[in-house]
Length: 449
Image (cartoon, rainbow, N blue to C red; front, side, top):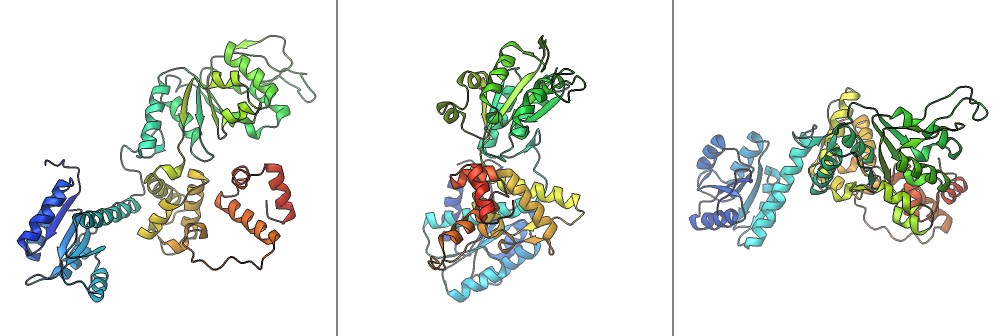
């Protein structure tokens, strides 16, 4: 079976020729590039001439033994993983191998499946360690400011490329903190309107009474306090792109007016009696299920169809695999530079914990966490104990049945808020209540808002 040069390289060391050949054949069939050596001296010569990702060595061999090779790899080849196999498995031997630096310890006889599983685990640790050492995203992974190499993000980047080549309206959906505005900016700055303005508008952050004036502008005397005419966001974005974030937050009355803008490409300033043409591309985003809002009568179906010409779904961080590690290291490098501190390094256990966490606050939550770790780090190394309690394993300590319902509810609300970095909208969604009810409970339990 031919193996491409970008596959992992493995060196197998064993003085038993038959064992060496069986392992070599199994690894080659699995797609790895394999070198073999019948002793430590030969193995060292190969390692001096060849870059190897993983060394698999027998423990007992004539002259220098496997432990000597493990120590050699650990002290001379920082970017190579090592695992030990032995036909004389003991607890003491395993402890000795681990202390010497072996990541895996496999007792003979082992099955093909056990061998491949151990190799996979060892290489996985190597990849995690490499990721923790690269504080800048590898070349080719940062596109339009978007960092990621997962299949989910590759699909997003393909969609961005297609959307950028058109003038069609785009609806970007996804949970809070998934980078919807970054996707919108990527569409604008990689398209023909890149020289024009990009105007982001947080529809949920503008009071309802001011939204029309902010979007479409107003003329002098249109309302109390309007002492001069003022252009709105649509006029400001003329020739470029307007990004309507949290589009689901606008009122039904405002939805009607926005629909007319999409249909006619004209805006009417508040207090004016004539409309004016605008040349604006519209990108919109929502962290809510618009289909569900339509069924509840809270969002106009015809406006949804106007917005949803092209659709891009921003995947949650928990579905992006190793992108969590790339982003963590990217943020670590950025904040280390900002705060003039040495870069932090994540241990293998910490990296595993980051990847296993659910990330309800997505990229924004990760960014805030890394910033805190950079600021608070004293050693430059981040281990699991340095991460928030929600990311750490906790042994069961009993149900705590002596606590009141008030205490349990108060603690749960605090924990949920902490998990989403204080995002009350996301916390209310997780708790299954609305924001008003959440605010009442925060006041009731005297939880800092």
